[in-house]
Length: 139
Image (tube, rainbow, N blue to C red):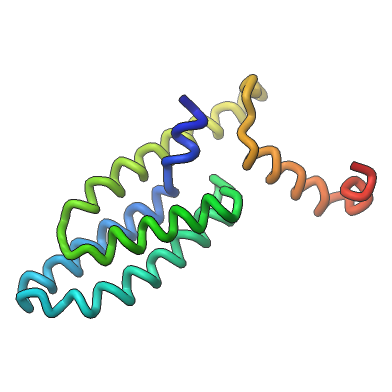
């Protein structure tokens, strides 16, 4: 279950930003009778890049491929001029929030799950390399 939430979830901050921007773009598209679609395409691309950076460097610490994939998904969903993508992003944001809350509880109690995600292992390895550069060479 945890692995699925990690693969599907996006950072709640990114989800809120996508929902807010998507609702503003949808309102503009309705008012301009479809002309706002030309604006939603570059905004969707910019939002996808921002989401990719958030996924890569914020607490989920997704690996590069997963962060880029989520960013592309957000860019495509934002460029679609309907309010439906907001529901999908809200679900992904909820999954991301659940993952963050679970990780925070595990961190506080000191318990580790039997299955640690590969992205979490990579993040721990990077943190160790920052603290001790010789540990990376020894491993």
